[in-house]
Length: 403
Image 1: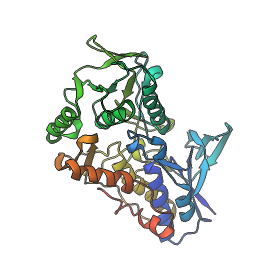
Image 2: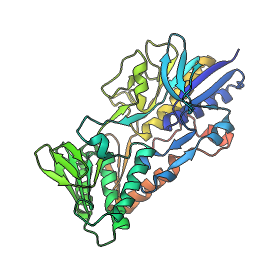
Image 3: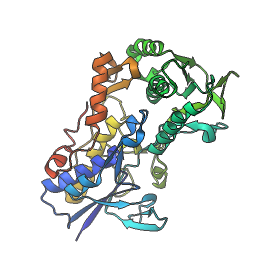
Image 4: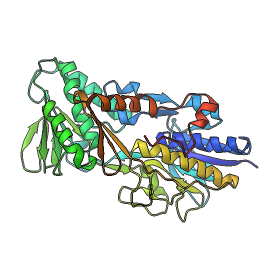
């Protein structure tokens, strides 16, 4: 009798869950006719989300169908809308709008996260983001269209709301992107608006001087201790009443787990993530695992939880896929662990910063860090080759890179 493992999501966690489940199936000598592995997502494509702050975002995807075919994982096109744990089935909508159901014996939720957009007047209508491929492409089109507008301070000004990791990478890329389109002598202004007391505070105290130096080198203005209260076609109003005229407002503040996690009657955290055990299993709900940005899990024994990041999602995905397959095959699970933690922050033409450890020790700066960031973004986070042996070898949960 065939059993079915279904993985929802084609991001980093979903991709590695499929690879790892197929790896264990292969190691156990089990045929796909006995254990079918299915990945369901709107497209069989990995969006290289960590790079969406770059120009030409339409290039920042990688096909998954070839590697899925190579490892014997089937693909179903659809957007999952419901989970019925009692009936062990999911409901999804096809690209044509039809509704379908798909049964499972084990389910892995790997639906990722979305940008949190508060109900700020005008934000939905006039704000941009780099949260999804479509959002990044819309921003890119908008920036390229600025050259057709009459020169003005508003045209030449970009406001980035949020001074965290994404906000910094977006903002530090903007001077070069704008000058490429508006001319090298254009009077460019980039402003980061951050409610906190520092830009990049979560990246650690040791990184702060280097972030400030980079912002100064790029002439990026930081407005601290204030937020955006209104967005319109011509700019933003800040919480202290000041107005910044800008044709381009980019929201980069806050993430939440994708909404499907709410379809599962289990405990979630403040970010909407399902709280799972070290096997990535959702407690109290039979047959369901969660991983990546959809899950909150301890990654060590000293109080650190996995973050909503590509770095954690890839390894979490490998453990989730392995353990869901192990549950069906009668094999012992492998508890998730991820002691190492690295941050590599792009600073545009000012270089980059690489920190290591939860204490954020600065390890590399400038060109060396920039070279590492380039390797991470163009090699390490892409799918493995569409060769069964190489792809399955890349998915060993104990070896998926910690950077």
